[in-house]
Image (cartoon, rainbow, N blue to C red):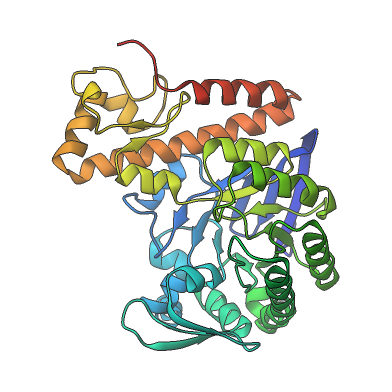
Length: 382
């Protein structure tokens, strides 16, 4: 990779529809399939940045909506950008803010210009447009910028979905123009488009055509993992993925549970993000190869074993299930910290296993074994 290259995606191996490769960027390489821990407000909750990196994470996700409200992108910019602000020197992907506007903001009003809403923090009125979203992400110093879109709710009628998708495509064109106007930032960063269209095949295809006509560095699949269930999500991916550009990264937004990720990798997805491993860690749930377990349960109180035998995280190498159970039941902060680290380690180990299986041409066998174990439940004898 030459110094002038800002973005390149190399596919190293394929196995069926699945791919493993590397995204090259100025701040470092991203191994794919990749899972991006969510650093909503400039922090992966309960984790130090260097510890997130130690789990194997190559890239984090930052949230435009939350950082826009507090501490504000202008303040982050004055303090040297989000990377310096949060002490993370590797790539950061920022979402556009659209999803949180739909899910968190009060009194939303949609127009062709953008979305006017009231802050959930202080009630102040804010207008978020494609141009402002690009400006915010530029001020944050994002490496991968997401175009501004409307996250179509589920369920939605065909006409509702069509109207929403077409608005998102018009906003995608404005996002492209807004991104390009930030010349220095655009010269070192990448812009991803977001495919919408709900559960409707023809609308998804129209969205892909519109986005590829505009031209993006990568393409995300939006509007899934919003309540439709795994079977419906996979059905949509089954008809969407063959139409997606083949030589650019493909990102499934907001996904997901481990078996969701495995199935999506089989269908050709390269990038994922989800709050599940960190949120679960703060609420006492630990992920294991045999399914999630609730560390609050009394069955762990005398268990000397680690959460997962052979896991490299501190929760498993230094402490017992009994101790973690005690921390969680006592409401000790260390319990949330240890479980969050463990869950992020589990997710990154899962991604490493998928990358190896694709490279070695054994993904189907690996994925089937993973699903069989994960569905079994944590039933190992004491």
